[in-house]
Picture (cartoon, rainbow, N blue to C red):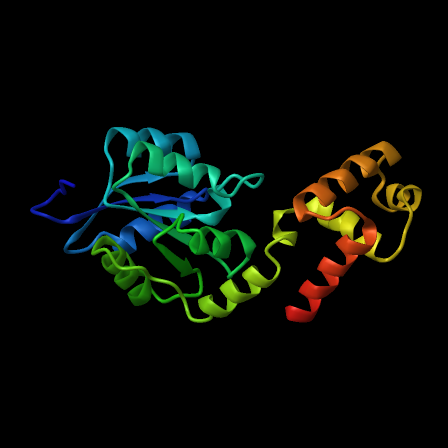
Length: 213
């Protein structure tokens, strides 16, 4: 990939808060690294990387589509396959760990990192290395242990928790302020996503995950 300023690494920074986005750009825009774009919106980022692929994209986790955390990452790969992706997250949560575990990103930086660690991570990822924080492997193991329940949406997880308590559909509907038909729909989806056939099996999977966590 061609780079600017005599071989400098080109970086695009994307964060929904302008002050933080521009602050990150100022921090990393040093000798050997050129921040050629700062974006606050997903559409702007995709247009930029599609027309002018940077070496590295530093992307805040909050910009990743909540309903499908991999959607934007896959879009970046599609329009700029040579661009490496660093995800900026406040913690080793489900979305960031799964994205890293599945090879959707090349690096993960926590917001608690120092400026020196942040700059070093950008350089290392640009050089082809993978950079992940301390505790990442343990988080991956926990993710693997509860992989099937991670396939559930937030609402489906709430329904599963109440199923495991032995509540009937009508009681679950009252607790969650949704209709009984909606509960039935979620229950069918839970069975399908977990690969089970009844409440007992679904509750057992949830209990196994809790013991492993």
